[in-house]
Length: 437
Ligand code: GDP
Ligand code: IMO
Ligand code: MG
Image 1 (spheres, rainbow, N blue to C red):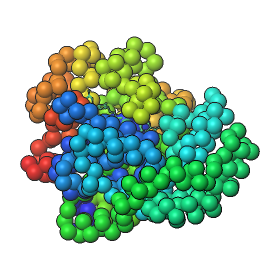
Image 2 (image 1 turned 90 degrees about the vertical axis):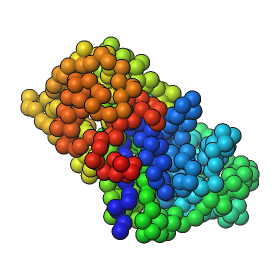
Image 3 (image 1 turned 180 degrees about the vertical axis):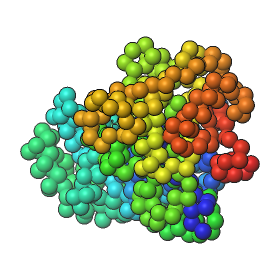
Image 4 (image 1 turned 45 degrees about the vertical axis):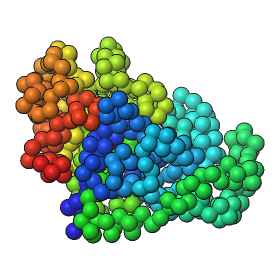
């Protein structure tokens, strides 16, 4: 039955929660790993031993031999960046033979990056702080029904024909509003030809492949990118990305029904970070924030920007649990909190004279919310070698219990370092079963 062998993994904060690490860990037991939204704005880091991989389009399953990796129809793909990503993996002897691309995925074109950059410039102080990868403009063109898709790229003649249909309008926009000279059709075709030749054979009907695999009882992971608070509908709009980042998008972004989301694992840091602009109630602009950034190595995987850092916020976590239907949590970076005398956890917001545990829907209200903290005792032990919950200090376990209580979602996994091996799976949970325990 669909659902029992599938797990959707999503970010439960503002992205960079450690999804890449968690997915890589679980992918060794999976048959397929599928991305379903976003593009190369994602930066998913996987570490094992001395190997560090930073993946942008390609699912973390690519590092598990025998696992098929899919780029789903809900994604936007920059063919030129994807080519580089493939070349980098192949250079490091990682096979990319099992990568498949949905024929329906949309393409991020060179002009989308121009729009992204100029849009941000024109917004000035109100800018979103995008990754500059052209994500928003590519999704906008998809909605405007003038996007190009992977199926178009698979055949250079079709690609030229489709581009010839849309380029006059794009050039007019570029020249009249974006201060850009525009693009020549044949030159663009030549730029994209190598991508067409390499990627063309990988383009398939991923919906059918996934549906058949699930029917055969294969184990499927759906790899989310970004996080709940960056969701286009439910995030801190307009400071969001341009795709649906919530678990329900795994179905629509893969060409499957909602039953495909058997279980939903929310990846969540033991504190909070955000890259880009927008409200962030528990942000610490003081020493505490600097300490989290330094100890947690909080610099963007895609842009290298320093991440904004603050305490764990159970108001957003509970909201993320609701909008995703989370069935479990994977708490990452617990090791980063070692050495603090006390650890803060936001249990509510104070706003306009009243206290609330509900995440407000208006950004103006959120901007004014002040976190109400419960303060927990910290711990000084290095926990990076712990492999069972029992090996964690009492204070760390207490903190995890508070995360469970305040979010209403059980912790199934705890990560105590970036390496694959630095992982604790709670016995008796769905994840323990996934891993064969
Ligand atoms: P993603 O986008 O959600 O995959 O997360 P990123 O890869 O952008 O950022 C997470 C960063 O934290 C990466 O550098 C990971 O290697 C690192 N990381 C993941 N889990 C842990 C952990 O438990 N402890 C520590 N110290 N680092 C971790
Ligand atoms: P992963 O998958 C963190 C943020 C950007 C910006 C906003 C819009 O690694 O968790 P976009 O380029 O998508 O139009 O930018 O979203 N953002 C991310 N922040 N992690 C990500 O991905 C992000 N992808 C986009 O910083 O605030
Ligand atoms: Mg990231």
